[in-house]
Length: 139
Image (cartoon, rainbow, N blue to C red; front, side):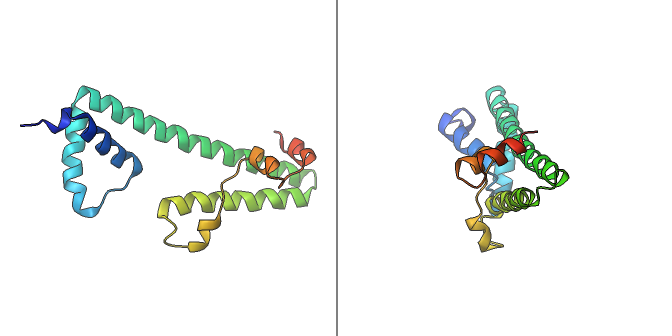
């Protein structure tokens, strides 16, 4: 009999499924059972912690970029550069829509499918900000 916990291909698929948060309701009990088996396996537990740490790191990167854009927006408001502040506010909203759209697979609001996540650098590279505006955004 094959032990599923030691089958590398099975572990990769199970961990990927948990990482992507794509559990179907009819699979929840099986996934909980196998997740417990993976957590109790020394190697599986380490891989699971690695995936959870990676997820936290990515979410922190998104939050940091969101705070950079908001700080630049408030700086622009403070120095009475309302056009720059409006550009940054619109991009902040578009970034939020892009992240929410990825989460709900664009099923709730289809207009989110066109939202593009951009950093300040991306905005400058795509011509949404001039070099001067980008320098003003440095906090």
